Image (cartoon, rainbow, N blue to C red; front, side, top):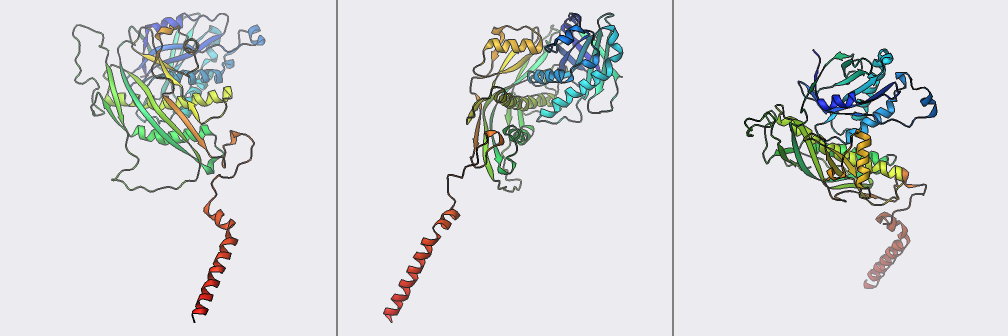
Length: 448
């Protein structure tokens, strides 16, 4: 038996309202949460149309093979940044005309594997064996309104389509639990002199991978308590009587990371020649959401962990993209973008985005509308962090510059090594030694 998808009714209304307007198809993303028994779909968003050239306008009945895989994958990558812990891109939907139904599977299959590959490339965490690896493709025929729901195992390149159940339900997104925490980061990333061919971005990503292990191995306190991972998260919580809707719960999470050195384990020191270093420091706000249908502690902890890792990695990625796009002059201190949350209408869930200090609220609102195809109000924006809360400090020595620092030749170090000083003064040292020796011999001769 295939997987079951419990879908918010508003998702069905949104997809039904999509008009092809002479196009052969419209595609988009399905967003929600996986669980061992069923998946929950809370949001659908169409992929923004790419700027069309005149030749495309003349031939609106293009074949499905013209589905822009790169464009759709980039949209999925951008949307994934806007998802807090616990939410993922579950799959894709496509609304087509009747004539295109036969050409559907191959193009969509390639797309869903491409989306997953793009997600894996930037993750700091590894998928566990227990996790659901199936992703869904929903096809709606605009003529007959017929719906087809199939899944693929994205971890198996040879996976074939499996049928799945698609069930609409009211108020799916209202009974969710939120977990919030503030994490102080102080990540020191040495830039090896032997890897100067690496860009600053690659070196930073390598350092974040090492830091991610500390987050993965940390201890997580939920409302000040350490709970067994197989325990029910809502154990001990009071349930309201006579109310079918679950009471909204918010949990405070604190993260305790282990010290790099422990007296219980032997450690070895590594001497590394460095050309500089990168420091990431500041306080970052993290949030995760999980469905209230018998959640386990391990599910909550995993959602928080991944939000911590994702938000730090995403901020660095956004910063490097901004530096590349705007050709910002090189400097030692860079402001990491701070996090902005916005409520999902009719839901207890909040989505997020990132904002630099010089960006306006209108720009963030427009970005939400473009990526998620949902209108939001400026007053609904919740700026969770102050400007300059988190920053990146870069210190690169001039004798081993990064490849993108220009064509200037490497400069000599300012500090002259001791060996160089001795070499420069070897004549004077020899003369002094001869004089001392001669004086000693003379003293001995006259004393006799």
